[in-house]
Amino acid sequence: MSKEAAMKFVLKELEDSEHRYRIANRMWQDAPISQEDMNDAADGDTEANDKIDNH
View 1 (cartoon, rainbow, N blue to C red):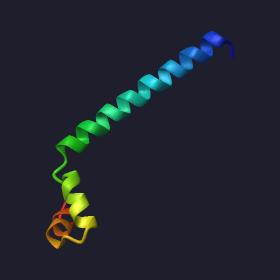
View 2: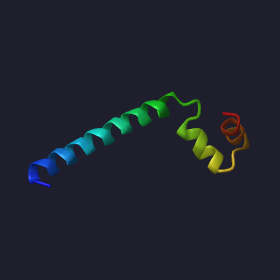
View 3: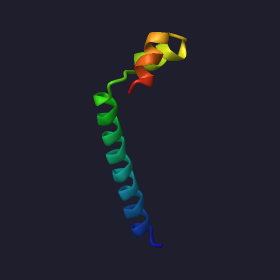
């Protein structure tokens, strides 16, 4: 593989990774469960745990 082809491949991979990151971030922002809920559940908060289990 030439240097130019390798650079094009790397740039395409970075672009694809950024696209996947943006989609995942958008899905996370729209999720009914927040990071705070997950942290609370991990700390033993039963109400937060129930909220997570119900989604």
